[in-house]
Image 1: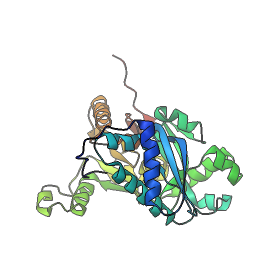
Image 2 (image 1 turned 180 degrees about the vertical axis):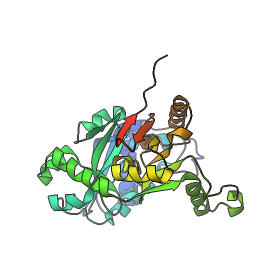
Image 3 (image 1 turned 120 degrees about the horizontal axis):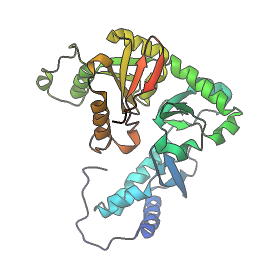
Image 4 (image 1 turned 180 degrees about the horizontal axis):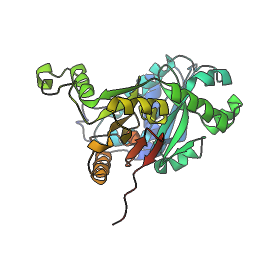
Length: 313
């Protein structure tokens, strides 16, 4: 909701509860179909917040909006009518989504993969689903659609008739065999700049074939691509590409990892400090995309993934 006009008429701001009631009325005014509004607690990656489900009559799916965040927009000056119109637009578009495929063990075999999240920041979420410990991270099973995905919760296990161990086994197998990408970070930056319309002349100083220290590891979609480090086969390929047995892995976000030859990294403690600083900067990364403050290692000879532990002085 950026670059929108703000209210010019000064009126007393509504309290939060009054705002929620008014928001629901305004959303319903924008949509022809009846809407069933259902309040819920939304346990999301790295945060828990109040959610409001918008279930349209006859709709295949029900979008979830977050009144607390919308209230912040309202207090910042955005008109309630504009906030409601945006939410109504989300609800209408969601009705056009394809139906969720039948939730069967057969469909699960081809649709479930692992996603890495921060273990400490998601203790509450991890109570609701099976997961696998991965050092200081947790790998959770998600069901991936053509667009979007959803968590395979404990409730969904009952619908599927599968145990948590069985779902994790399916997810691990699909994660190991997924196609991943290892690209020089300079090449990625150049490509992203051109796609955003940056003048090619401004990128001349960035040589995409130059030998950069860092490589981006992700999957084809770039969504939850940090799980690339869960594929031992892929990490073996990365080690060969970088010409080293020892990789240093930096958690850029939930969507990608950065890899480098550990010999070229230098002071690991300083690198870890940089990772922490980036994760604290909201201009650099969104809260729900933060993966970890840690630095990881992979040894191609032992096939072991480990986490850097700073030795107390």
